Amino acid sequence: METPEVESKLEEQQFWDELDTILSTPCPTQHQIDVQLRSYLQLISTYRDDYLQSEYDMVKCGFRLIDSKVFSEHKTYVRRRFVGRFLKEPSNSARLHVITATLLYDGIDNPKTFELMLEQNAFARLIDLIWKDVTRLNFGFHKLLLEVFYEMCRIQKLRSQDLEILQDDFIKHLLEQVEEGGGDPDDPYNYAIVKVLLVLNEQYMLSELGMREEGPPPTNRVVKVLSFNGPDFKTFGENIILLLNRETETPTQLLILKLLFLLFTTSRTYEYFYTNDLCVLVDVMIRSLADLPEEENTVSPLDYLLLEPYLTHTPAATYVSPSLPPSTFTYPTSPSTTLQTCRDYQTSQPIVQC
Image (cartoon, rainbow, N blue to C red; front, side, top):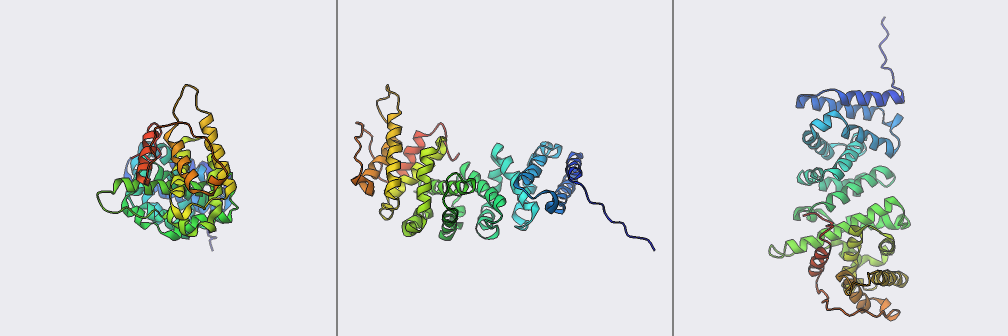
């Protein structure tokens, strides 16, 4: 009686060598590309528990594909196939994890990847994965999904049907994650959530500009949730003040300033921030004014955009009374005007490319 053959298990280096062998095989036809991608993903799925326990290893698999011959020669086709699989793969699969990493890092260098994802309605799948399917216990994958969400919103304007998918409960879920995480602004996971909330606010402001003639814009759910549930989510407010104080990247600073302006001009959120945080904020603004070159006689509109409602509406007005430099700048009276002013001011470094 013959003994059935038992497939030998690959050692770790053999696994990586086999992955490279699969990806280095020439693929002149789309059918061969499909076969190669299936073999690549199947090998990853088979050895997930053995050699792919860390986020680094999953990302490494993604870069193996991005750097491969098949990807360099057939980028458009491979991207489309991966976006299609992103929509259908089970949420707990190693395949989806690697597909997500590949789309993120390819998209950072090639924005067309994120445009394709939006076109193929991947936005709804992203929301479901972040909100319902992938728990915070799967830290690395959840953070990866948040980063894809942020980059996807950063490089393009969302369509009205995309904004309609968003619900108050999704915003609450993100804010709850900030609260449960202790609100450490240096925590990369916490930072990823905060950036998602900031870029969503930006998208709502963009929608107000673009839909004036088409009808009422969608409700800004970030501001709405903070208006009605602000006391439950104070940690988020602390974080954005701390980030503004530390942040060195202009795009992120602008995202924070825009949300702060809306919160300072919405009556329900006048008292959202702790007084100590407001004092930190005024220090940041005064430092910004003090750092202006001597030859510059005017301050940026953004400084005044925040100072005026800050001094008019927040509790800190009773504690601080800075002397404002003379200026002919007129304070905007609506979020859309605010956005236009900010966009004019930051044309050299747009946040959302549209």
